[in-house]
Image 1 (tube, helix red, strand yellow):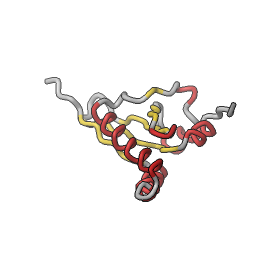
Image 2 (tube, rainbow, N blue to C red):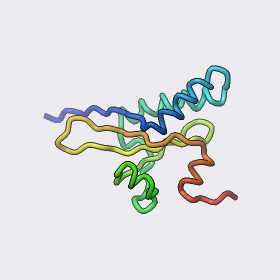
Image 3 (cartoon, rainbow, N blue to C red):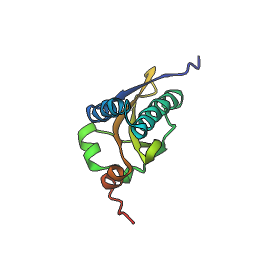
Image 4 (tube, one colour):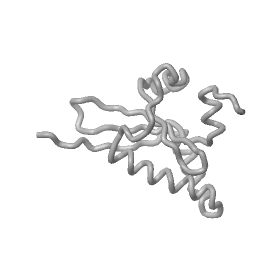
Length: 120
């Protein structure tokens, strides 16, 4: 029986805080509404295909994430307004469910800083 496994998307506390802030500001800011709506669209795509995002090389996963979340994989999804959403997958072949755990939702500048990219 080749049953498709369900994917559940969960936000970390940090990601949830950013998500709720964007949701509130989306009421009056077109830019924030665009980012907020793009999160919803990308979450649906991740539910359909957990490997939707761009994989980050293991050697580039920030040590902070390794320590804080104990992760061994990381994916990046580009959002509207040059924002980024980072997530990791949790689950195994034996489990029926895959969990896409969103670690961070950040602006492009915050993302570049997190990964040590220099501005031009």
